[in-house]
Length: 311
Picture 1 (tube, rainbow, N blue to C red):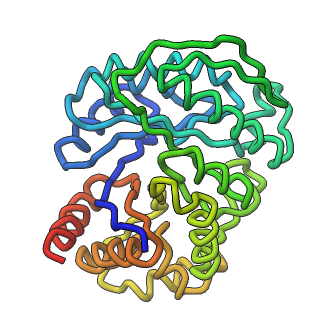
Picture 2 (picture 1 turned 135 degrees about the vertical axis):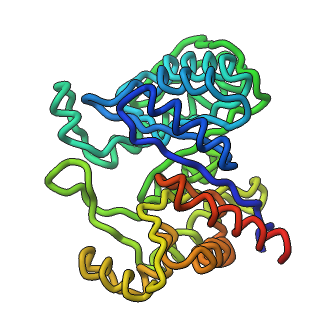
């Protein structure tokens, strides 16, 4: 049986204004969140690296991170340079989150080929194999299918080990992430829908059971326990938890029982939501949750920690 990890809670900003990003980062820090995160999109969105630099200057304790960088938009050596610099700017508070890219509309906007999922995931895996030793302070020679680097090096981060999160789907990609990443971000999503942003949901509890079993097996007994992460898509403070789950299940064509159980939703009273987080950790080992609502979630986060401390 794997040891129980302490909870970590993140807030992901969706703001497109620097002042709002800084304001929300300060609010998240004051509320007790562990990490402030930004995404990575083509269009009118802020640069993730520049936005995090502004946050680093405006805060002092909260960690900062990407959730997640699109691996296809940048070479891994360039990413290592940016992230290592941010680690110095933030005095050792940066965490790097990477994904394989999913929005075909964003690829079209910049004239980039949108390769098949297997190709994008293989490219991400190679990038991780370059980034990990670079961020550990090593010179890197690498000859893969997608990347070739010779004696690459970067600024040494402040942290002894800069945490690396990988968000992926699929058995091969999850197995690779389990062996190489510090954190695996579970998505449990299907195909990208016509708008290029949303996805089919695959939130069946039994499917997640099998996914977690696969990750644990891939990591192996001799590997450190990988941290498991879930991005909570909705936090709903309600006295009618079952009814809200029914409404969501109708919209997403997901059984209400799975809407109630999934770690990607947090529904109910504050107490119900806090106990839900504990239940997700007990069942699946998920200890790291990111939300997009500071005000609603902050008291739930505090209660979950209080219940955890008294368990």
